[in-house]
Amino acid sequence: MLESVIRRNAENTERIMKNAVGYVVSNNAIGTIAISSFDTTVSVGIVKLICGVLVAAARSAVRDLDSTNDLCFLRVGTRKFEYMVAPETEFSIVVIQ
Image (cartoon, rainbow, N blue to C red; front, side):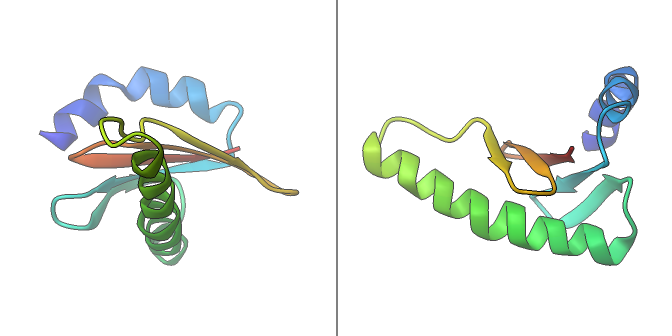
């Protein structure tokens, strides 16, 4: 199913990549990387830290504020990069700009 979503959105991915450093799409169900513009080591690090630690903390903060709400999108800016994360139930998308 995830592969069909990736194929359907290939045009959008190419459009986004014009202004981005890279992206990672991870499969949350089995904990693997579905597709990435980075090498495997970098992709695993991004998924582990951003999708694992940061998204969990942000989701917890949102639920502490309103237990009926959930995290839909996370945008974090640093000195070097901007990380945009769309955590879904089946997969997560991280774009680095």
